Image (cartoon, rainbow, N blue to C red; front, side, top):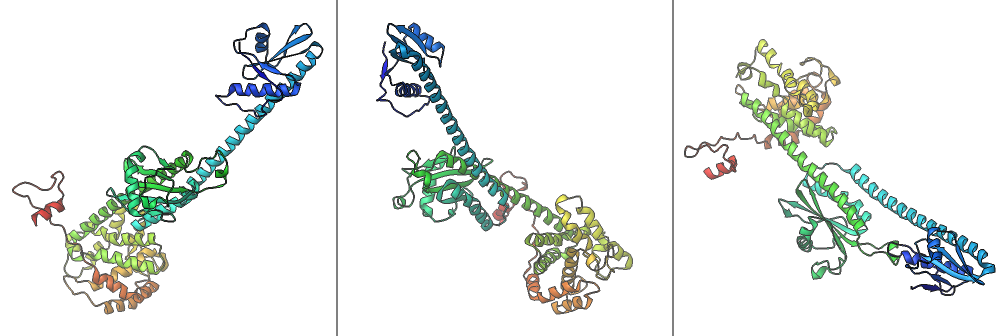
Length: 523
């Protein structure tokens, strides 16, 4: 049998215990005992099955005694299963045994306290880290607004990544978005650390690996030789959602902090930063996908609006372009009186649809080439009510109903459909009333030529306070040059000609062939 002797002069004061160091803890405890009882202690071999050792193992915390003449052999089980053995004179055996049991219990308690403190500190650090991550993600989520233009999207991406720079401790972060699977120029949150070409080449080398997990490189990055002095560590995360790749997010150079001075601190990026970066990138990808879906929805919505406008103009070809011009005038005037961009777009949409109710007017009235009689006038005046009926069940168009319904009300209460007076008329209706009248007066009709801009503005000013809001007429007159520029530069949409069959075969509905491509081929 083998055993280990521990002399009180050779013990180590350190106490450590991990999965692979269980015996080391017992060695430390035995050394502590040897120091306190001032005796040499031996650790019994694992296969020692003498009665004393077996009894000690069966009663942890209690010293077992075995008298051998003037000497007493003592044994005490240690926390991890080893047994400490010592010998002393019989007259001091019980005192030493009690002292040894107390020392061991105190050491065990101290060790357990240290473990608990370590666990608490670890848990505290984890909670703080999670809190910082959640705070970062919450900050990003609360500040996200869906942008419209490409420039707005670029600004949105950079502003979304700015909090991540400090969150992962990077010197700078680059977003490389894609258009039709082609990498765009990198968008940097701070200092540009790599050229566009070097960034693209780096992503190209790592893109396959980044498709499955975040890529962390704290050495052997693989940048171009000219960039070795600028970039030392990187993290690369693919930005994708719903099987659609939006691009990649690249973090460069881990900034040193006070934790890096600790001997066990890992330099460079770690899995903790990679996990946070992946979370934020996934959130960004979700927002970019929402932007794409919103654009598709808006394009579809706009196409539906265009179809409704086309339906009106198909009934009354002499008003072709009228709705678009009125919508453009209204948007311009709305901006001049302080409407927000979204409100300006709302009134533009209202202008496009303000005459949609004319779909319900009989051709004999709608297309009459000369003045209407009183009965016909009553019929034409129903188009605002019909417009409201057509649109009111569409949830997305609720905001445009006031302008559609009330753009023929008069300031003095003599208009239709409800004879509203003054500022009781919704502002969209008042703006459209001025724009509608101006375009009607300056446009050609089958029975008359359009009048001059000067004459039309004179009529508006003469009817201000009776037919139209006087303040809006003044604003309209003040910006007449801009209004007239919009009028003169407007080009009505040319109706699309349906492609005829080629060699007796229809071209509409051929899989993989669009109308536009057929038209190009026929040319």
